[in-house]
Length: 431
Image (cartoon, rainbow, N blue to C red):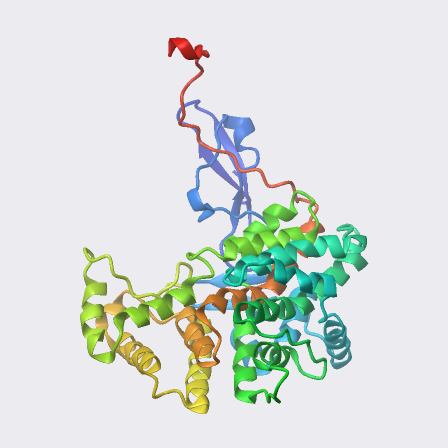
């Protein structure tokens, strides 16, 4: 047997199948099972695709055991300490950190794309006043293919670049328009003299009747959150973008599909669940009671924002954002809020409680991001929208990678059929 193959013995047929073992640059390798069905007549079975590599990718690497997250080989800690969100966007899209000139040009291009077509802006008036912001964002992003159909040739590199810059620039504007619609306030146009995070805060919280100054600590925290949420390998929404994109659909539709997947409470709604949990606990003097409930395996109560499906140690993003969380609370002066006091006390208990330490249930990025968003005045209904703004660059990077991958095929999973065997139709009067 070659060092690059793995032998699988099929006891039912007596056949031995050689599967190619393919190594990655770091982390686990894979077994190429594409020949398995032809050789054995059997599919692999992996609900949730937890042990399945659906593609090759050179964008993001996660080591959950070591608590490692890298974008294009750079540890996220280094990027968070030294980069801006747009610099990280360039890295994810193009594979390398930009030079000063490249970053300036990229920044200018994104700023020039922030405006929405006025017809697109009027689409928001068609939504009910209490429509969920994610419904509006998904719908408007999907509509972009009707506005920019002349630059959606997925096989044209220039069109792919235009799409990437356009969607990255317009997502904050779309998100802010959704927020203003829910608030019944006048839409605020983007200001190209502000950076990415500053512009978003301006469009969210400025009103025509008075001046608004962006708080630099808030903008800095928001930029950091966007860096930490920019990509996370083949998660549910990213896989959805790849699956939709594999059909050759226009890229705006693929991104809209990713937004819809992110909306699910098991994916993008985790930080919202943290705030709901804190409000349910209610006060500091009830923490011990709910910690005890969380430890009781027969009690349905769960502490949200602790532990992670992938990270079996510290979530590296949580370690980074924790400092920013405390900085924002101190700067904005809301540490006297019962909710924030409760969150900080719960964090303190979890970090020293043997039960949490033994089970590696450390606060994750969702625990801190929800607290920061609340401190910035962003309503809970907008939390997943903020996630979508940050993750858009990851979705676009994976879509671009997939489009030029010669191994890309339309996504078509198979199944283990457990339904009825063949049977004949019976007339309705004989059933």
